[in-house]
Image (cartoon, rainbow, N blue to C red; front, side, top):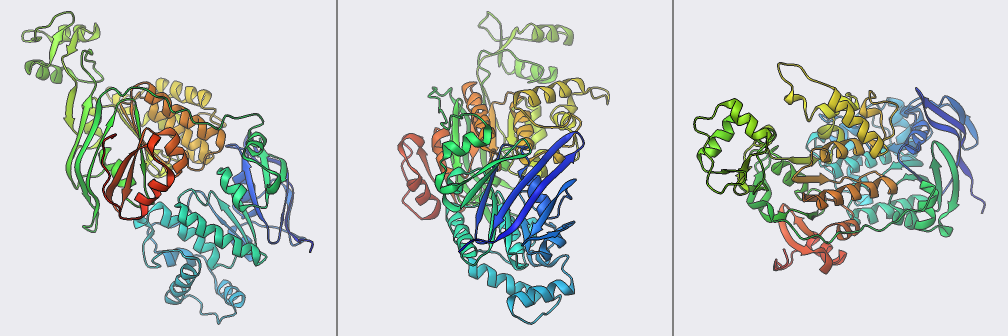
Length: 582
């Protein structure tokens, strides 16, 4: 039977200032079809779907639904045509519960339409009835969500689940998913795919924006590719391969191999001992965590979402105070000169009194008794004051600013890019200054160096932005991530912690981030990498620590393990494994 065209986009164009996000885009979607939308960062995929979902109004072009030309000026209009979109950045009210987020904005007429579609009696605004319906959806599709839980207490995975349920609740026939599997476990992905296949069988249509090529080949029927804001073409999935899709996306051949560098480690850098953390409800979210990460090593962290990955990195970074245990940092300063980035004159005098320094070319301890501040400054600038040994410091209980004031170069890329990593309303230059503004003297902050750094990152990381003065929230998700990762590695950290650094990025950008992480390892940094793609963890990391319910389930050598073993540790109770290679 010939499939019916349910969506047709004709000549869609969208312009932001001098940036042409979409130009003369033509795209079709058929009933009972799963269409994947691929393209590089900034190629216009999300913008094009935002036009279909009523977030943006096209500057030119037409939208047809079931052959009828329509005007979609808002998400409410889109829902009227049974079109719903789950966005990469969640559209939720943090202080509302799940059920309140689902029903917010619904009118009496909307409730009637939903009831009519379900063949039930309309009950209007009734939170209890709505909560029951949410529970029915959860039971039907295998989701786990408390309708009465507030969004600000949810994990990223739970927020993503809520967005999907929100669309399903409103009875969509055409579902747009922007990076839907980015926060899901393999089991959750399979469940989602089962749901999508059932929807497809029922004649519903789905558009998936994703960069996971293996998922494209598994779930979609057809793939459309955008390049520089234009639809470059489409291909039936049965005729596609990862290589073909990658070349269509970027316009040239891409090496899809992650080259793990075999570099000798450079000594202990971070030792975490018996680390525990109590949550706001008094429940332990981290339980007796023990591990060591070395210089020139990448330690992967794997686990089902919500197993403590976020809390572990935030605790090391000094963002959580209600902790037990120790976090020992070995600052690699042996036979290295002291600097004013690292210490101030008062601290240098105190350490000299403890016998921590020697004069360059001498072996005996250096005494600074009787030396003026000017003389000490001159000695530091000439790199004459040398450490005997590495510094060993306990970071437990210290705030981020206290860690920085100790001269410790620790960089953290959190999973919430705009919530914790960057300020969305600030431009690129001001977001660079977040790392350096305290270095200003007399209340004066200089913008020259942050501006130069922003320009350097835009050039080196190929960040697509109208200008350095553009608010970062206006950039695509991948370009936002490049800004954040680039800023953090620009400090030449001794410890670099990254949480889901390629979430939502295309193939080209992802491999650029992998290369940046590898370069930090090559420079001697200790890297802690939290990821969800086990293939990437095994290819990129030297060892992998598996978290399960806030505990260390095992630490494995990536060369000697596989996805099945890691998955078993993630999901089931197993005997503790010896850490001979850890």
